[in-house]
Length: 237
Image 1 (tube, helix red, strand yellow):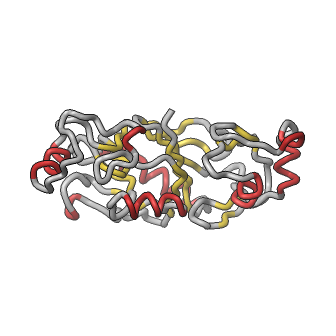
Image 2: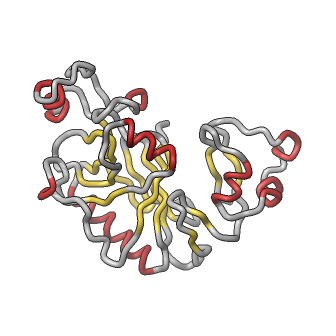
């Protein structure tokens, strides 16, 4: 049975709506909740099987074909993992980074060229405690989604600016993600190849261009099997 990790401001009714199940079905799958209905941040609860799945982007999808390749993603600050939607088996795990390490070129540019007096060249901004640091911190913990297409054409490439490398795609945020984006001074959250720049403020950057191409093939296959979007969970352990 799939599970969900409770996040700040979650409610049982909201979780039920997100996964397209009734509140009573959610409570039945979690007998211990029936006594108090209280939930806490970080708690794992069971999601009942069947019904429709409502992705964070608001795209309603049919229940996955048990024989088809349907996937989801998780990023923990160091690794991006692609997992089977049905079994949670890791299909691919690649090295990734979010946020700017100490002495990285982009961090130096923010300090010297953009006169950012709030930044320190000797500080590592890849940790979860730096999520609110404008332009330098990692992508905020949240659920995002990536819309799938037939060819998964790159929406960002090296031609668009330094650090994009082989290419990448824009992630769709939920409401809290859009607020983080607005006040974090970012133009959007992306999943992309880091291009050898050692760090990417506010996005998830693969360290290898080959890895982003491998991910692309998996996403094309998932779309071929009927998947419309992929959930991307950012959770720093």
